[in-house]
Image 1 (cartoon, rainbow, N blue to C red):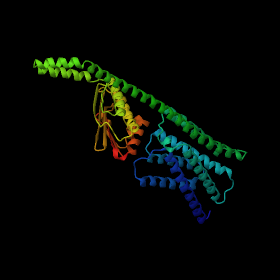
Image 2: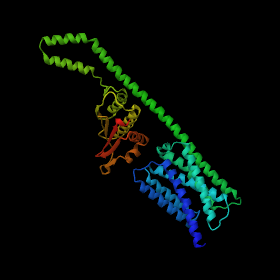
Image 3: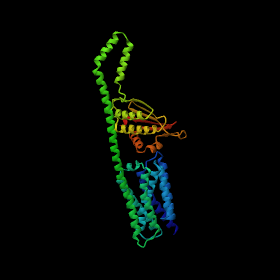
Image 4: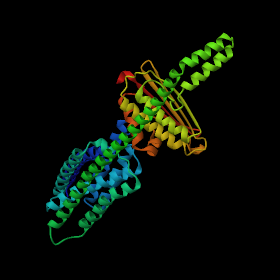
Length: 426
């Protein structure tokens, strides 16, 4: 091959691979959660990936070595995003399988190779097919569904089986020659369709999971209202009982006052006040939504923990969406209770206040963690969200929705979550 032909081939490969890298970026961002790093760093990573895979393709064409470099490159790109290892591996294997399927469909569909140019045109056709596939995936479901997905070991294994088996079949097709020219095309096309269908099944699985979540939310909401109704009825019964006997109480107080025994008057009034207090009503802000969830969660905490401290000072009316506030309180208190009950201290403290349109929330609980592992987690809350999954992601999403701030710290065996939400941003 002449020098100008080599330059021509390299330029074609570079142009095609730039388009392919753009598609890879679009595909990765469908599945992965963006990390708080500089845009230039991400751009550099994709630029390095594009350059490295271009060199590898020019050196080895469609081969095991090129595909190995491609796989390592896609895996490396996932570290620009904030997710678990299971999510990174599934994203890498799935996208790599679809990319390889598209490339082999294009390569096996056309024959001939003139100075290597025809091979690069085949790769361009594969990139276009890859773009169509990724566009189809992005339209199957909202990308937030994929980003928020949390895989356990069983789910990760099941989702990895199909692309891994597909890769084995594709590499076998690449290296095992067939007497029938159309067999590799059909096999590669079938592997592509099978892997694309996995996303539809995955989308349906997420829909089913969301329905289960909604049912669980309604069940919890029912329990909250039922608990609050019991609290209200108990308080009303105490008021009715006191009112029923009010005449007798007044007569008794008058008799004590006539005798000039002020200490007995104070003691009598103190007993009346204690009688009015409902021990199940831990929070009395007047806000039904907040009172319901806090009274329910605090009652559970009192049953399971040794120390439960509360300091709630908020007005009766808040210019906040009760649904979002319940999501924040529900998830944080559930996580705190789950962590605290596993410790010897079994401690939980809740502080909530409103000042000049700013809602402050602080939840602190004992946490089973070694002193050597103490750390400041900060706004990313990566370690905490890996423990608590979707619930913590929902909290973070709501805080960001209202341009608020969230900080999480883990010090001396205690987990502490601080949240600020600006009422004016609603």
